Amino acid sequence: MANINDDNKMEHTNILEPPHRRSDKFVTLYTNTAGIGASTYDLQLIFGHVISMHPKDEAFPPPVEDLAVVVMAWEHAKAFASALNTAIEKFEKENGPIRVSK
Image: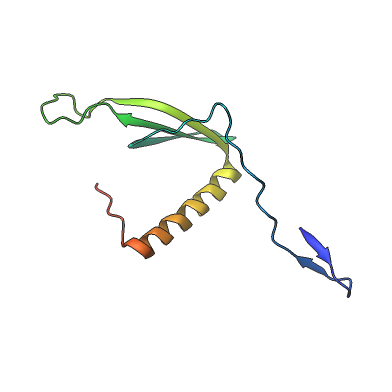
């Protein structure tokens, strides 16, 4: 948001984040796998979990149960990616590098 000061110049002020409330449909999910789908118009983030990782299971790769998909516009996805990278950098600065298995 911009304000005009006494010299008739624009000053930018921080826009406060709007208050949040949780929908009656709000859910919390645990996920240990994620996939990406894409179209010209939007990005889909598909979250799920590996059904079983028991060493005696013969299925390889193990089956995954999809739990939810989040669909967003590409502009929102880019802003989200930036915020996610910032959060990861802050975490690693405070806790050390996150190791990712290949």
